[in-house]
Image 1 (cartoon, helix red, strand yellow):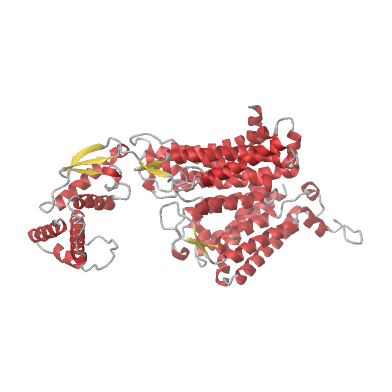
Image 2 (tube, rainbow over the protein chains, first blue to last red):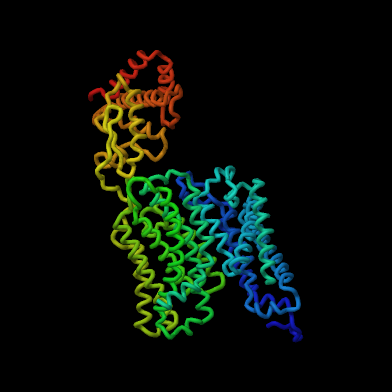
Length: 207
Length: 410
């Protein structure tokens, strides 16, 4: 399986095989199906703070799963072999993350276009940036298998006690996933999380 | 015990404890301060700390169970019976999450130190049972569907399950005591039901592994797993008490009372330190109503009155306290007639609304009327505004007329 038909070793095929690339793509595709179904529809989560409950859309929530999927696709079943490979692991992982993030972005846009919620694309992309960053931070500190922990730990208070106001106009800084698409602070935080998270993840990868 | 200590030291929960502690603290302390200052409300608010632990607990337990099943390492642990191994592992995971939960609870309780009474222990029991149930659920999920994504999917599934499906006050698996006023407490029926569901889920989690390993070939062992799994589902859906509410009205206790505004003002024992606040408000109400309505013999806090109805509230700010005291005052003088024309009834209601608005403006020494949303015709508000500009004797005279219309005999 790791070689081409002519018998030569194929690094790409080996990489995809050891990282279960097909399963990761299938997982992200499943998330995209959920996004197509949920899309821009608002679901009312209970507000445990006692304030008025504010509906949340799939475009705000589902990127959490896609971001986690990007990082979980880096789980390497041949880690010992990969670490002794001639090509630096950091370079391989950078490429891997870029491609996986590209897949997640494409699937997000496609899902929202299919559900006729194209207006929600900026919000979904911002949250994809932020959640991928948080997942990367979680993966850097706890390992890629627990990449979902930080995003989930952040999402629980954000969606259950946050009061972002109508259309996310009054979101506080920690409620960035629920802020309006044009909220500059939320974009800055999402980009900062992505840069810090992927930076930490790649730095840890060499150690 | 040695097995437990080994599992406790190697449980992945130890890495998750710190971020989950941060999320749990946020769930309690990022919410406004109305829960602080009295033991019942603070104890109920601590149940919010269990929410991230339950959701992450489902994911973490699912991930661990899935990983062990995929690696086949359970077979290596065959020196001990598999249910015993599973129980030890779950106990270690539960110990880590419970530790985080109890730390949050203690931090929240620290804000109530010095208040009358003491912590209400049924709320931590409620939270801990939720965490153990979540771990058991996650363990079963991990056993049934072992993939690398099981943990993440189980955590998100747990989030949606607890927040959208089990979020009602009827569910034994409600993830938080949503309403935490002083006049209610956890129903003992509901708490017992929750503990039974938790115990059955735990038993199912420990035995379902054997069912999967034997593939149902050994009837005795596979039957146990199937029995506990079915019993858990039945207990969630069909046990007696399924119509009961999570929170029940609290039995009225001996209140703490003090004279105020010509009446006796009574509050729950845990609000004894806030009695002066209520007495002062009763004085303001009495001064506003002087010459118009006599004060009632007693003002009672919500839940302390006859049948637990009516009463003033201390938990929603000074304006709400004044408003609810005013309603106590006017309600004592209202007359309700069974056979009355709609017009007469409307006149009686409007007279009461005018009087209450005028009294509230006077009690707050404001020229503005309280900004409540009233249904129907609100032209009477302008009449009250006009009266507020009149000299004092004329105001009292008009208000006395409204009071007479409000309590006119049938």
